[in-house]
Image 1 (tube, protein in one colour):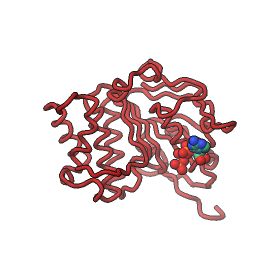
Image 2: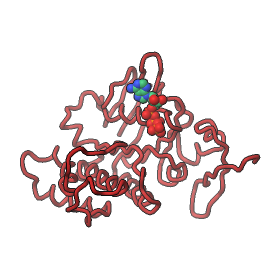
Image 3: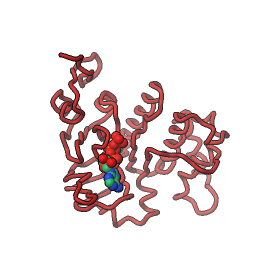
Image 4: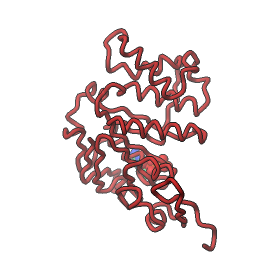
Length: 260
Ligand SMILES: Nc1ncnc2c1ncn2[C@@H]1O[C@H](COP(=O)(O)OP(=O)(O)OP(=O)(O)O)[C@@H](O)[C@H]1O
């Protein structure tokens, strides 16, 4: 479980993250929404301990994030960050195996080899196993990185998965598949935090949504509670319409036409 209390991150006098409190239980998927520059990636960097808060606390399974040893943290949470360019060549399968590095000393064990195959299958990249990562398309690279991240925590109970725009650069089919995978990981007991730009994906797959503007919370709660024209206007400065859709518990969000 991730518990965030009164989190703040300042650069000079500017608060990039301003007094945020929320929690994500095991089995839950939290979607973080906000306009460009709202502070989503900064929040993600705080959650993965890449940067230190100016104030407030982050607890991971009830323990201050700072108290974790690096190796222990690597086995407890995995992070898919936004930019994943590599300056050296790696074969896809080797890259996915890197996710297992926190779990073995010198040689991968049978369990590590098995997990690498399993996650490559789940993310639909088995056919790319022998390819040079740098020759893959952006969408294929994204799936390989997700596979690596998944391999890192695959056999950890109640692990935390932090995903910064996991659907970035993917076509519609793979966006859908990645979100279904994120959902199934939450259902397996993982604690998933996911930055998204698509409000409809967020309301469809998340248990809770956190909407940010200038580092502050605009809304936080179950999709049905927070998806409103007012909250979306406040967060993104756009006018939208909500349309009920058969089979969806939350209405679809569509941009309002000019004048409506
Ligand atoms: N180290 C820094 N020093 C100064 N400003 C920063 C720093 N890091 C981020 N910012 C600024 O803080 C704001 C929030 O940045 P952040 O990357 O968290 O936004 P975001 O919501 O992830 O945006 P996007 O959707 O465009 O990825 C931006 O205005 C950014 O320019």
